[in-house]
Image 1: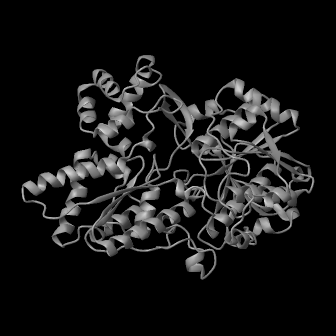
Image 2: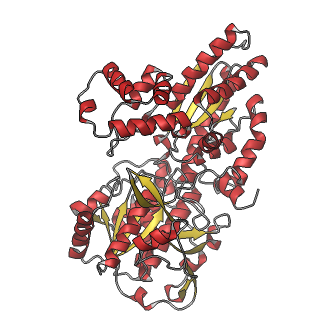
Image 3: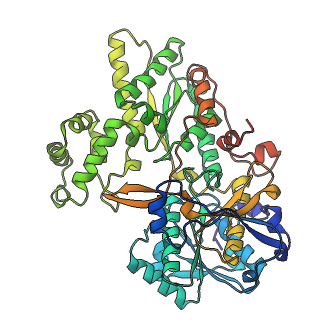
Length: 555
């Protein structure tokens, strides 16, 4: 148990997450209904060839019926938390444990430490009632830790199989995002293809919100994280109204998709919100984006409003055409380049890079402030690529906008005063205590995963649907992981991966945002969502994400 517990944690420990009705009743009355044969979202022939053992499985629903015989056999289950943290992870563990124990008191759960590396290094702890008592309804992944080790080689698969078989484990649950669940799919295929008696089930986790589709309505942690960021952004909006002298540029998490930025916009109504997918669709340059932001600032200055809020998605740079090209060239030239790695001086690094870039990328690189140039050339990720998340995009835009306004002032096109503050809201949201929605959703995902394992399934993602209804009316089942896959070009090779869900520019959430942004740009229409509420009226304590409400047709 944790060494220190706040009064809120003490009160929160008594919260009892709700379950779909089908999972809350007698285990002897839960049947398994299979849907029609499925296919991958794209590249069907190649995905089927790569996943010949697990491809084409039908979707699964748990319905009133006869309990499969396999549910009566004791299970030894391995659990790994993979990738970045997301609120509610501990409730997935609790749900999985409680589900296993309800099915059979002799079932057991072993948590592997530090993510997938724990499977390779055979480091684990046993999950027990006593251990879980200190973690229910809390944020974080600290019960067993997480990690980003990729399981890709046959040697790794063999090591995992050896460690699990030696412990008598025949089932594995992987809690993670699209990459982690791609790993789960590959492991399931490898085990089945090599007649290794280990089955694999995944759970959909990521605050970025990009692991979703028709079958997976939302990934867990998104609701809590966006409520945390929205509270902070709402506070900043109130500060604007109070101080009336700062423009706040807020970068929020979301490298590959802008779901977080869009959700914050719908909750808070900032003056400007940039959506990376719209930037890519319109092929906007950095100069055009700068002009758009500067135009709002200049227009508000005419109304004597020299303050405002700008929200920026973390991965914006990768969606700007010239920057995307520049980053790709940098990745090609610098990934594991021994000559570049020997250079310590920042100015010498810049000079080295300029010699190797094509003319267009040289111009793009030279257009950046020196501080951003240095960040682009700083530490690489394990694959040798630029770590875009570490680039201060908010500071880049502040500098670019400030320069533009300075020019406009000389031409009498701007008559205001510009003073800016930069913020990055990221890690603040990843380990927050889960909202009621995430507490229930995560518990149900874990509980449901236990039933998928007991039903003898492999290569499935735990799926809880009908999420706008009360938790008791949610639908439980599983979705074949191969159903979500496509091929992507990574490091010069086509690889099967779960397709990331980007913001749909034709979807209801973006359309509502687009309809209102001109009004939000000029008016002081900031909303103040406030902190997450765990008790109180349902419309305050149990409200789901705005994007989910819009996507599922209630707004």
